[in-house]
Image (tube, rainbow, N blue to C red):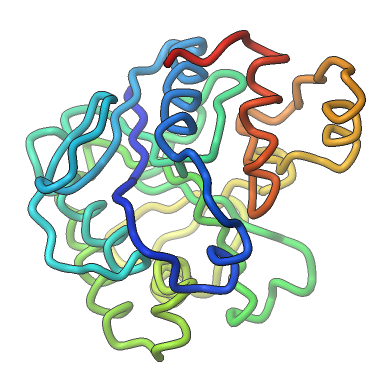
Length: 246
């Protein structure tokens, strides 16, 4: 299996991106790649033909220059390409691998779902788009699904295109979003419960970092540095795994 993460520099559009401020995405990609190597996976960045990055990449010609739409477009480009030649885990650039990641390929598409009651409303996004498992044997079906997702996202309200369109489109196509096995059209889908699949850096972890204490590896296979927690990604990585290469 391999791991891919989308990245191309974009000016901030959403309040969340503006509040984050400057962030070293290249170092984040390097840290994510090193964490994947630790669990036996090769890591590639999905980017555009007009973007040069100092990390292993797959480059595709894309037309969208809005982040949410571009993520779907570059994902589709990968799924349609010869580069998609084995089972692939898609993760965000700010996600680290902690342990074996191959469990998600029992279905054509694996997504992370939020099962708490407040996520029964589709507008609250019951899918967490930080990780998706794409089974190679479903290549054509996945490409068709993502073509529909991109088309759906292109027609969303401007506020959603600014932030959340990539997730909103998947929620629409996979509704009702459920944990466990389901079928959506010709796709076999598995919803992996967020609580056992991916965890965000906790306040207790931040406190340990700020007070010079060691880190504790989570029990979940993926660790996410959401929003302003990104600013602790390097410190956590270096405490857990060692220096980040220049």
